[in-house]
Length: 316
Ligand code: GZL
Image 1 (tube, helix red, strand yellow):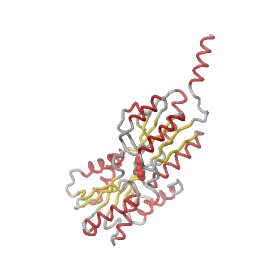
Image 2 (cartoon, protein in one colour):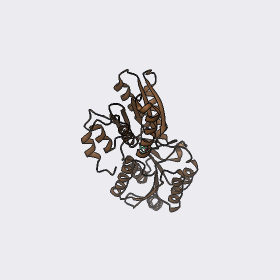
Image 3 (cartoon, protein in one colour):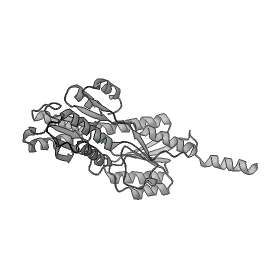
């Protein structure tokens, strides 16, 4: 009996019970887009609600800053790490160091090309599916008519860029009327989206032959809308626009007829991540390797002002 009691007490002291002020280190990519800013705000709020101390590090979109932050979290002995990986490759070594330190890592909103025993789970949308939804919408919208498409890609090397490009290409594959004539990164920012769209318009005779824009996120599309207007064209009419994120400003643009469709991405990736962590800390329950968030298409037929009102105070 005495031995059993000793074993139970030892086990109880080994497993941190919920209610400890656990600490999670969060390596965030930066604040390149409205969606990213909202993800940061929602994550900080979620941590507060969960009674978890969040150590936050903004990497200004540089992988080396993320790796430095992860090493800092490991040295501080945090209870877990959240990582939104700016690009997909180059993580094996530092994730191996976290594993050796017995610190679980959860990926938020983007994935890594690394063995999946180096992270507990990834909370992301189906980023190939997002691209497919965008491509299928455009295919229906042009209804068989010839359509030259320009594409604003996200950050080069990011899993989400690779996937959104693939999904869109898969959706239009075989539709001989649809052709991507120019494709370039706008690095997920409004400023770059405007600059690259200006170059597309200039290269394509003022945009006369451009029928549609596919942007890997709303912020680049919003920048492109400015460029299209300054070129004397009507965004949403002369050039159809489809993008991804469903940020409040994009719902305003669609409501005003200046864009056509957006695929929603929830900024709350941390909620499911904290839930998985708490289950693990409580009794060692391991989550699935992928926790998928859903994607909803909004078009000019959707209630965009209701979506705008629902989202406008979320920190975008
Ligand atoms: C997608 C996320 C992307 C958003 C962009 O999960 O990584 O990064 O679509 C953000 O707005 O920059």
